[in-house]
Image (cartoon, rainbow, N blue to C red; front, side, top):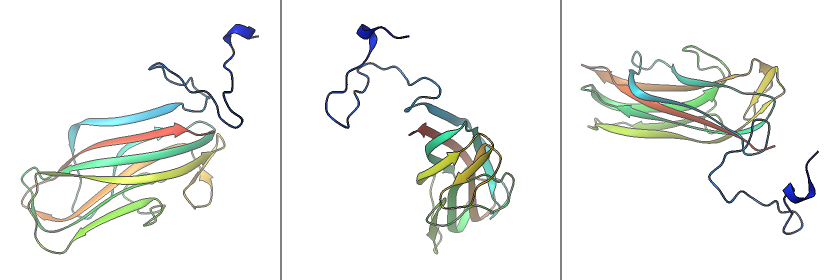
Length: 173
């Protein structure tokens, strides 16, 4: 049992006192953060094919998830660019669970472009986990607790694009 001196005081009705140091929330508490980063370049896969950039295993709770993939040209030639980033409970090269505007963001260029690198960022997606199933965005619950950050880049030849990735989940309740 906590002593009275160790309890934090609510400063105003409906507001909780935050931390004033650089500590992190303990597992199971609001503010808990899970992060998976790919910091060494990896091949982005075949042209116009979804790939898993990274993943997180979520515990029971409500999570706000955001992800990003930095695509690097790595000598590839592009006739146009269709780059995507999204989160899904489905692994592999499937597009199942990737819904444009909900769990997937798309960037298109219909003309040839030259770039060395650009970052595709996914807006915040709410994910619910009951310990056995995930509900991702507005989709129905499904079995599994692993959330996959997926990417896809198309219209390239004469080279293989690379990527770096970041997937972050913060417990919100």
